[in-house]
Image (tube, rainbow, N blue to C red; front, side, top):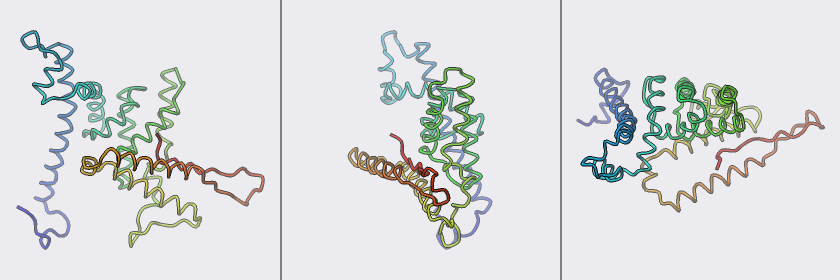
Length: 267
């Protein structure tokens, strides 16, 4: 039964909260089933259970038993199910498939356990800050960590490099460190006395909006390839422009200019 606008007011009642919890549980069950499918596919493939009468191929099995699931998607599910399971144990709930894809490079260079611990830390930091974690934020942090550990051959040192980079950069995605950018009454952001800081607060808020927008599944399905490329080019152009901005100071005339790292999107 639909709730009328005049009756659906105020905090959720007990039965409404119960319905919402059940709905959330259904979503979690669907995400859990996703990595369990990867596990099942791995069992079928490694044990060659797909052969049926002895002549069926892996591709034919996917076509007949899994509604034409592509071999590339089946491979990805088999590759990521262990990480998804480990994150669920660490976090207490499954992560979205889009987050899993972005987190995978971290696990490949360290371990599923290390990647799960790092993701859980990031997730709970966003929860504490009242900010939704989106896949683009996971991707940006993974890229920073991968870059920081590039060329480090020792496994222990590489893990330390990943952990350090994950914790400190990019700072903008840690909401507990950006409390001054939260909306105040009237929907306006707090303003620093320095106009550059105020502008950076606006950029940070815009970055969050863009990240959320890229996760809109309805828009993604309706978007053409040309439109997606146009939008991606525009975002990269803005990033290139901002990366050239210089912030000067008159405190020390001999001091080097501070360059604002405004790289919002990496290729």
